Length: 400
Image 1 (tube, rainbow, N blue to C red):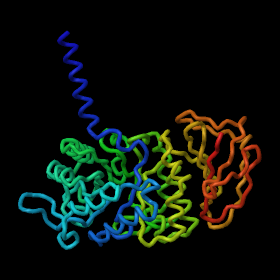
Image 2 (image 1 turned 90 degrees about the horizontal axis):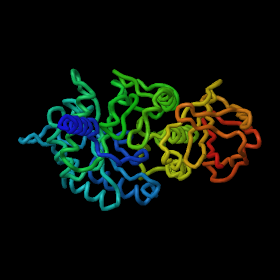
Image 3 (image 1 turned 180 degrees about the vertical axis):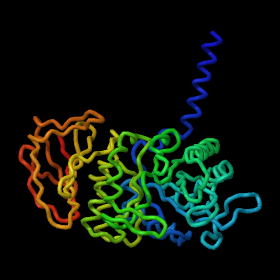
Image 4 (image 1 turned 60 degrees about the vertical axis):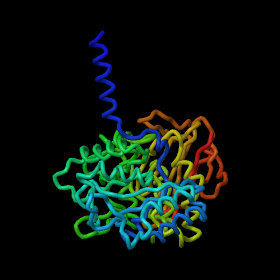
């Protein structure tokens, strides 16, 4: 009997070590806004408060974008005499807690940035060696989301570093989403599920459609190059543990068609939807993309299944994603630089998700619901035939 009790206690102890994150915070991919893509370190309390106002007034909050995440550059260049992080007094003259309270008063949640290394990517104080102290301060400031980067980490073990920070957050006691911004270097999808709610799978994104952008010592990736790297990772994603192909560049300089494709692809991949544009100044087209409730519903589908690339021929890709109640989402993407015809025979093309064992039933006439127009576009009884513009997307919800 004593031996049985011993092994039961050992099992409970092992479970407490392996599952230290706060559970249930991200049953669907997190949605919000982050300051980095547009502002980098040029941030201040007035701008953040204006963004909070805009999230509400634009309809972004109502569409699901609830996390306002302040990225690198919020802190002073040195810790105080007690080793605490200090908000930059010029950027945040009323302190960080005042900004957090303002954001919370808008019905939003507040996210903050730091780094697993000795310095952040912009050379501000990192967290290495201060994990528990920083976590206590984040909890005292009522932070809801921590983005944890991977710069200046020579000699540091990624799994150990992120696990330590995860345990520190748990010890601090305030539930917050933990975003592992590790760039996929050490395959966080293989060990990240008990540690955090999402993990980056690639290097940073840049506002280009299908190339790389040289940043000197490294290359930022385009929308399509990032999508190329997701094919083998879908088995690691699901409720409360998501692959993160990085933040959205919608509204940051690509064409309207490219923005549409970018947003559609991220929804198909069940990716976190973290906007990175200046929403105070966004166009009606950008707003229409980011707040499209039909596409957001596909991203936020409760099944939590990451979609898959079904075919890729002559730069025309077809993606499928199983949804709740037997529905499917489908995307046709023209990656080429010229208009391309789309022809798809629903009845004679077997579609099966071999990983999760969902099958598109060829005997059913699904309704084709165009997620962009919000209208029916016929059924799968008739073959799909269309001309798709360069870098653009056709996207449907197939309803039973």
